[in-house]
Amino acid sequence: MIGGTAKLKTDRLTAYYGANPAIKDISLEFPERKVTAIIGPSGCGKSTFIRCLNRMHETQPKTKVEGKVLLDGEDIYTEDPVRVRRRIGMVFQKPNPFVTMSIYNNVSVALRFNGHHPRDYVDAAVIRSLKQAALWDEVKDRVDHPATSLSGGQQQRLCIARALAAQPEVLLMDEPCSALDPLATAKIEELIGQLKQDYTVVIVTHNLQQAARVADFTAFFYLGGLVEFGPTETLFERPREKLTESYITGRFG
Amino acid sequence: MKFDRHARRKLFSHTIAVITGLCVIAILYPLVNLIYTAVQKGGTVLFQLTFLTAITPNACSAVSCETVGIGPAVQGTIILVGLASLISVPVGVLAAIFATEYRTRGLGRAISFTADVLSGVPSIIMGAFIFGYFVLYNPTIVYSTISGSLALSVIMIPIITRTTEEALRTVPIATREAALALGISKWKATLRIVLIGALPGILTGVLLGVMRAAGEAAPLLFTAFGSQLFFRGLNQPVAALPLLIYYYALSSASNWQAIAWGATLFLLGAILITNVVSRYVIHRLGRQMVGGT
Image (cartoon, rainbow over the protein chains, first blue to last red):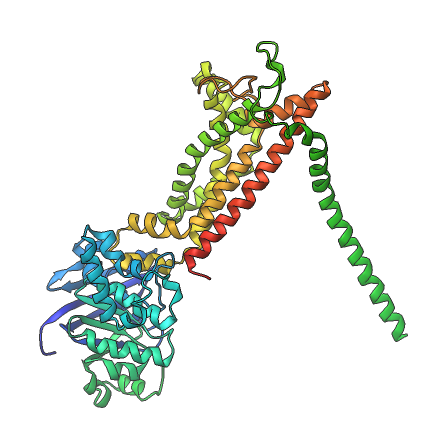
């Protein structure tokens, strides 16, 4: 279906809230070091789907997951969820920095809590991650300031830096710009373009232009099912499905 | 006609204002009167240098004493409340963590409900319960520092559990999700992120518990029992300020009543000062955390 190797793959993934499936039978492949966008109207299961990819769905009460999610061919549902989440990082819809911590402590939290690393190793990782998240220049003189002293857009980049510092292989982004203004959004989008050099990125967005700008591949979800998946250009210009065409031309949504 | 309605409305409004004002006075009067009387009757004894450290007068027949005071009761209350806190803070906080963070459906709610019911139980019944327990299982130390601290801790635990639960709930779900998504284990996320975020609220709860316990006489009547002497061991009866106030206020000797008033003033002042200072510290801590200016 797609060129290159798939880093992450779902196989007939179904996820429930109570007795109701929010997504049904989704089989998708996420190519390595590419950006894949998931689009679709509100309530189509985009967020539920992406939360299954690092086993965050199951942290909510009364939820259930069926099917497989394969990371490098291994089913993450047979492994320790804590280890899975160290390999597959996540950025949420609203910036959620740890309000009790400084900028430095936010970025270094995974390294400090998940293992014993020498101080200069952690320092280097913090600087590297803040640079990767394009935040270093703005905070380098005040990394000891509280994370809450940053603007919304900066906080979201801080959350990206925090996820990157944990050295994941895959980065999941659940509508990362929905709480941000256009300027901050542009910054994050530019950043996503750079991140794919090192990471496999999956991004959920309700913004079609955003998908068109940042994604190499796009998947269209509707009513909990996968309607169409392909290279972003193809999906937007020559969609195979009528439903996809109606959605991207704005006939519903 | 129009003027009449306006005047009536004005009269009504003034009447309501006067009534509500009188209610405020009705609330304030007892408090002001209490503090005034305590200062008037207890002020002179409290400000004698040795009042807080000297021995109580009913021990003077056994030991000769030139000055009298409430030393054993001050010491006893500190020990009793300290020990009760050592028991109730970990138990109360951990129960609250279980109820909010590891809730398995009904069980979490059951803990909240139990804590609610417990905090509504009259304190003398708590004391009677501890008394009964010791009479049955440990009769040699029915009247002891241990039973007294246990009685106080039973009163403190539900207060701490409920306030800690509330404090934990103020930490957003998003914070927990952020931690889990970084591959931080549940217990580390709970102890090192969620609990820290709830710390100002938890400290407020601990403080409420401490102040409540420091002022309780009823549960100590048949546990700590009271004593004329300084602390003599965990298995011995011990003095406490509320007990001292109770016994001395009932006495017919006016110099003993004065001691009860002095103790009252001290207890009031200590609770008031602790309250104000710790609220200030907690407030500062909370602001520091969210990084406000």
